[in-house]
Image (cartoon, rainbow over all chains, first blue to last red):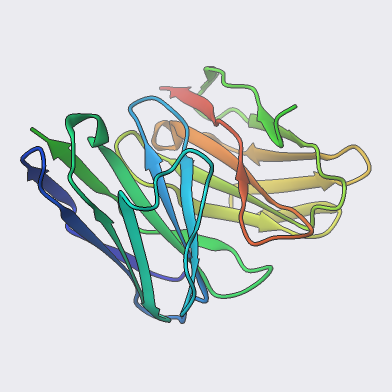
Length: 115
Length: 111
């Protein structure tokens, strides 16, 4: 299967700082990447969908100025959590898709803790 | 009505038994259906996808799709303790790029 990497796997930051998470498709070109958030024992929550070279489409209730998404190439998307607060602490997972009707592959996730 | 519905469980089966996981979806025009497995603290892992009505087998896993009933299921034969996880059903509707995920069914295989 296709491989998607995420970096970092864990990050601890202080309240008010910004954190960047990278998502890379290693062996395929991802026309679309997705960013999810998952709180403990809860289901996946889609935050945004990004297509290479276009602005991301954010789900209702997700602040685009707080969660900056850049999909600059067919293999890389980044999520920047700006001015992080403790309530932003969560498991952030990206996924990538090669094209329409293709399956979605998930990265290993990034556990963010904001102190 | 949710786009994709799953019984949250927990579902418990003895080792060696068949585990049956079920999923229904609301968009009749949906074309692609996926099953993911998620271990606690890990990200989801794709285990099966199915596009056509009928059964699709891959090792101990069988996905079954019935578009008329808007129903997709996953059978796990010879269940092992290592199969204990949450299983997520995902549906790609006819339009749009995103998947709709169910809330997942927690499966425990008892040794």
